[in-house]
Image 1 (cartoon, rainbow, N blue to C red):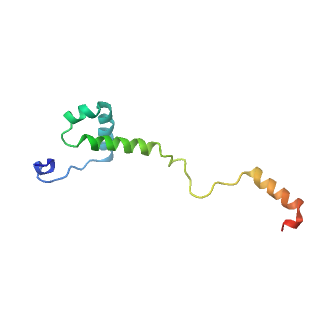
Image 2 (image 1 turned 90 degrees about the vertical axis):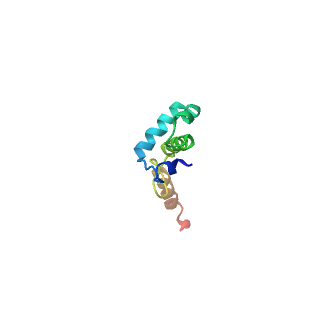
Image 3 (image 1 turned 135 degrees about the vertical axis):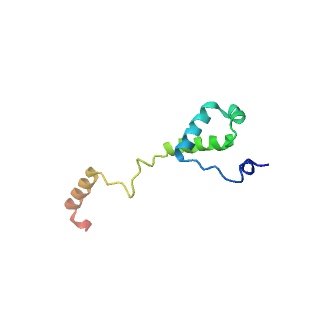
Length: 90
């Protein structure tokens, strides 16, 4: 009999905050102990949530900006100077 069948076939829905709390707690407890303690959710699921949280935290998305980075002002000035000093470029 599956775990879901024991609850009338309803799936347990958790919020992101609840998942985060379980993931952090589960990681602290460890896989072996988690297997003995976890009854609602499998230890693999809790540890997967933890891996996803860590990956999301360190993915660098907050530092990314859309589009190409700006050209440095020094480079712009140098190209402008070279273009004015070499009229045959145009």
